[in-house]
Every structure is written in C-alpha cells, then in structure tokens.
Image (cartoon, helix red, strand yellow):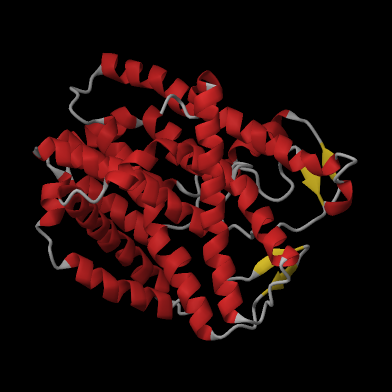
Length: 377
C-alpha cells in the first residue's frame, strides 16, 4: 500500500500540475498583449493580486515538482548501472527526444501560418532564415529573432531565460540534459548525499543566470536541484509521501508564504520568499494529493493524467490567440476587473478542454500518431 500511494499520488498530480502550467502562460500580471499594446493594466490592485497568486505564486510550484517527480521516477526501484543507464537513454529517445523535435516543428509551422494568404491580414509577416545556428536556436534557445523565424512584431513575452520555440518544452530540453548526466547525479548522491542537495539548493537560491551556449543553461538551476531532490528519495529508498506527510503543519505555513509572496512581488527580497514558498508548496501539494487519493477523491485527476503531456505540448500554441480572440470578439472591457478576471479564468479552462478533445480524437482515430506525439504516455 505504501508503494501504491506513492505511484498513485504522482499519477494524480500530473493533470493539476499541467493546469498550473497553462495558467502560467496566460498570466495577465503584465496585461494582455495585442499587437504590442498591453490591455488591462489600469485595473485595481486586487485584480493583480489574484492573478499573481494563481499564476505567479501557486502555479510556479508545478515545474519544479515535475522535475522532482522525474528524478524520483528515473531512479525508482532500479539498481542503477551501465546497462540500466543505456536502456534509459534509449527509452528517452522515444519518450522525450522525438516528441520534443516534433512539437517544436509543429510550433514552427504554427507560427508560419500567418504567411498564408487567407489569414495574412491578421498577422505580421514573417521571414525564414535557415542556418545551422538558427535551427539549433529554434529548438533549444529561441530568443527574440535568433531562430529561423524572423519577425518585426513584439510577442510581449519578455522572457528572461531562453526557451525553445514551443516555450514549455524547455522542461523536456532540460530533462534530456539531466538524463545524460544522471550517472553524475547518482554518484554525487551516493557519495556526499545531503551535502550535494544543500549545495544545489544554495546555488538555486543565489546563483546568477548562466549565459553559456546562448543561454541554454539559464534554467539548469531549477532542473538539476529538483531532479536531484527527487532522485535522492528514490536512490535512498525513502518514501517521499510518508516523509512529507509527517510535516503536517506545512500546508498551513504555505498559505502564509503564498500570501507573503503575492504581496511582495515588487520588493527586492521577494525572490527569496518566492523560492522558499516553492519548497514549502511542493511538500504541501504532495501531502494534499496523497490525502485525496486515500479518501478516494483523486479518481478524476488520475483519469485525466494520460492527456497531460498533450495539453502541456499544445496549449502554448493556442492560448494567447484564444485569449486575444475572445477579448476582441466579445469586446471585453479592459478596465472592468470582473470581466478581466472572468477572461483570465475562462481562457485557460477553455484551452484545456480544447486540448483534451483533440487528444481524445487522436487517441480514438489515430492512436499510433497519438502515441508518437506523446512519447507513448
């Protein structure tokens, strides 16, 4: 039962964590950008506090927890050696590399749709410049006009780090790097255990942005620390749910931390509060998910978990355009905070529903293609 609750807790978390990522990518904290103009910036503070609490505080737990889960499952119940490592490398070609390449290629085609005569009036024209460096940048560190698609239009994203053209897939990019260096992670955990995690945690808290390789390593602080944290539990055969469940006070503490994070967003010390909140939030979410499973209330999340990767890969391609279309089609008053909150909640929900419909249609009529796109998940 103890092992079952770990695996089922993880399975029940996949869909809610994916929902959180969708909300990150429709954050209206900086307004809704349409043709370079940000709409909705004149709303009252409570509007931005709600948006920040959901998209910039609670939802920011999702990717680190995904990395922790990945690290835990990578070493789960295996005697890690050369043969296991090679076998896992081969399996990750199917589950990570192929979907990563396909979904980024789909993102390229999706962006180029604006050059089609039938819809060209709705989009800024885009040029295509193909060189080895630009192709590499498109798939791994597509910042500004560094990729094969060159446009004079501002996307309004203003990312500090450098991501693939299909932005959420930076998680898959980093995970592939971690799989390659997994023997190092394993050896360090075996040799120096907690000292290794403490060093990674310190680097994550205070480390500067890494610009090597055009910025491709700028997210490695997040990925290596949380992947290694999950690996630590698995390698040492520690039941992560049992450990987290012992810290019963943590969910209450997280409520305080989340509010503190929300109300200090413009202050210099907020990054420290934010990162402390992520660690406390991870413990809280695992606790809550395990309790829901025990009480038989996690069934809906487990049933939806199979479509999580598809939502993860598709949503970024459509969510901004979906939001802009609804905003303009229904003439949403940008200075009405109630209308904008409704937009903020409806668009991600609708986007997720569209993705689930597409996933189930593919699964029913083109199951082989569906397995290819989702890495057999």
